[in-house]
Image (tube, rainbow, N blue to C red; front, side, top):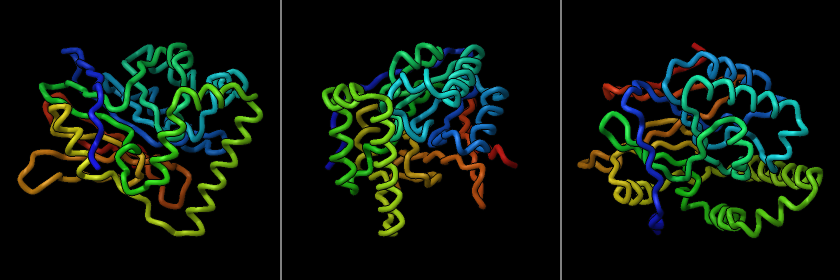
Length: 261
C-alpha cells in the first residue's frame, strides 16, 4: 500500500524569513501545567520567523465551543494569538485535535494547514505532515481515522451536547490507554514506502512529521537524498522530560533545541 495521490497545499515562505520552527505532540491539557508553562514561555520568546505546529497540540478537542467554556483552552488561545501577532503561526490537525475548526484558528489568527503541506523555504521543499496517515501497519487505527475524518461523522458528533462529546472523548482515551497497558504493543511507525511516495509527489526530499513520539532522523534508502525528520513529543513533567523544537535555518542547517537544557 502506498500513499494516495493528494492535492498538496503549497506554502511559499516570505523571502525575509531566516528561521522556521516545528513542534508537535504537546498534548496540552489542564492537569499537565508543566508542559503548558514551557510551551507558553517558548511561544513568547522564540526568535523564529514562523512556528509550524504539526498536530496534537491538544490532548483532545471535541469542538470549538469547548474553548468558550473552559478557561484552560482560553489561556491556550491567548498564547496562540499573542505569538501570532509577532510571527507566522501555522496549525495542522493531528489525531487528537482533528476537530479544531476554522472559527478557533481564525480567532487566534492562525494559518490553517492541510495535511500534507509542502513548505518552500531557503530554495528547498520540505513536506509537512502529522504522520498518522503513514502508520500503515496499524490497520485498526487507519479504519478509525478514515471514519472520523468524514464530514458526515463529524457533523453527527458535533451535533451532540458538549457534555456528551467530552464523555465520549474520555471513554475513547481510557480505552486507548488500557490497550497500551494491557497489550504492551509496539505501535506502527510511519512506513518508508508511504514517505517516499509522498515525497515523490511533492517533489521534495525531506519529510517532517510527529505523531509517533520517536524523535529521530531517518534516511530513506542508501542511495537516496530523501530523509524523514520525526519531531519530539513534549512532556515536561515525566521522570525523563522531553521538550524539543526542530529549527530549520535559511543557510540550510537543522538543529534540535532542547528547551529544558
